[in-house]
Length: 322
Ligand SMILES: Cc1cc2nc3c(=O)[nH]c(=O)nc-3n(C[C@H](O)[C@H](O)[C@H](O)COP(=O)(O)OP(=O)(O)OC[C@H]3O[C@@H](n4cnc5c(N)ncnc54)[C@H](O)[C@@H]3O)c2cc1C
Image (cartoon, rainbow, N blue to C red):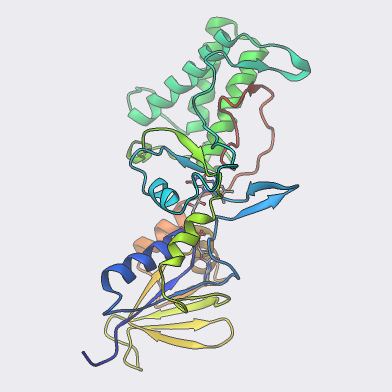
C-alpha cells in the first residue's frame, strides 16, 4: 500500500490522550500516523506518583473508585500496580472499616456516633431530595436548601453545636467531592447520570503512575513528544490553504499539519484559552455549544473553614480525594 497515512495528533499525554493513542494504535496503527504531543516534560498529566520522606506519595489521582468492572483497575492489574512485589503494603480501602468508628472533636471529646449517624441521614436525605427532584420546595441553590433543611432539623430537635459541626463536615465534604468553592454555585441536576463502579475503593501500592506508563509502553518509540506546547489549533473540515484540515502551531513557532486532532487538555486549560484568550486557542473558534459548555462548567475549591469534627479512622469527610 502506498501513499501517506492520515495523521492524527493527540494534544495532551494524560490518561485521556494516552488511552486515545493506544486505542488508535491498536485498531488502526497500520493505516494511521498517530502522534501524542505533550506540553510538559513527563507523561501522566494529573497522575503523578512521587516520594516523600521515603514513602510513596500520590500528587494527583490516588483512588480507583470501585474496582468491579473498572477499566482503570484492569489496566492497573496488567501494569503490576496492585502487587508490585512481595514487600509492598496492601492497598488502602475506603470501606471495610470497623462498624463502630471512634469520632473525636477538638480536645479529644468523644462524639456519640448515633448523633453523627442521625446528622448524616439528615444530610443525605436532603441531598436525595435535590437529586431526585422529589421536593415541593423551590430550590434556589443547593447550599441554601441544605442549610434551610438543617435549620428545620435544628429547631425540631434542639440540635447542639456538635450536630451543627457534623452537618458542616458534610457540607465541607460535598464541596470537596464536587470541587466547588461554594455550595450555592453547585448544580446537582446531572448527579443522577453519575455512575460509580461497584466494589472496593483502592489505592495502588505500585503507584498510580504505572497506569499511564503502561498505556504509553504500547506506543511505538517516538509517538509521544514531550515539551511540545500547542498554542493554536487551526481546523477546517475542507482543508486549509496547505490542503490539510488541521494546522497545529506550537509555542516555539513550529507548525505541523494533520488530518485530525484530538484535544485532551483539561477544562482549566480550555477556559484559559477559549474564554480568556490566554493559551491554547482555536481558529475558527469552537462551535458555540462547546464554548458555552466550557464557560458554564465550573470548578475550583479553596479548603477554608474546615469542619471541626473528625471521624476516625477514615470514615468519610472533607478532602479525601484532594
Ligand atoms: C489532586 C487530584 C486528585 C485526584 N484524585 C483522583 C482519584 O483519587 N481518583 C480518580 O479517579 N481521579 C482523581 N483525580 C482526577 C484524575 O487525575 C483526572 O481525571 C485524570 O488524570 C485526567 O486525565 P486527562 O488525560 O483527562 O487530563 P490531564 O491529566 O490534565 O492531561 C492533560 C495533559 O494535557 C497537557 N497539556 C495541557 N495544555 C497543553 C498544550 N497547550 N499543549 C500540549 N499539551 C498540553 C497537560 O500537561 C497534561 O499532561 C484527581 C485529580 C487531582 C488533580
